Length: 296
Image (cartoon, rainbow, N blue to C red):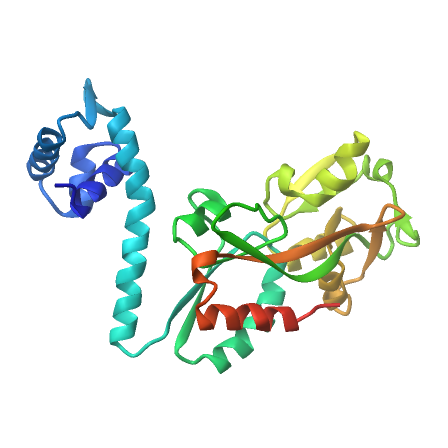
């Protein structure tokens, strides 16, 4: 009664906005899609869409099937891909999601020996997700999530892999460069440079400035670490980065790391995986290797 094609149609219509656009994406005619869904509605005894002018609006039943489609279709696609890999003698693909911009430097140090140790496993890295990192794990969009902010939910396991200190980075000629530590109010007149991440996920805001009721004079977002540190070294602003990352770049840029507050701001990086995947050997191997690759 309910087939994969029905779930695909529902998801594509919702994504594309119309039956016509969905039909074009699926390389089918609009009449074929309409006939297939009308037959399903008759079999189910309930409407999936309500027509409002030229647009379609999902009914409660349709919303339920859309949720099923978003959950089931990625799992089926993953199963087919892994079976194809098995048929070709491959082990599989480890799809890693990143919620930690500066962790790419660390990840490279893990991936290189991992690929050497597991030649029949490919690694794919994703940074953007339709429903966030946790949603990507549950939706089988990724197999592992690198994050400093684990969200513990049934079915997921988060393994801590290393600790680090978040520091303020200033140029060597900055007025604060000789300080032992900085206080939130000292940043009120500064241009704060960060990665393009929501403020509620930036530790410099959530754990340091906002609790003190402080905002920077200006907030500027830059995607790449090199450009960010070039800006800091030239006196165009300050940044908050892991101490280990700053230490790796200090030979290249004239910058100084400063402790955030008297006690500093400490964090952990976690690897999130589905509990059902914890037994997979090449997943376990990556976690073990990640724990060995500790950064200073």
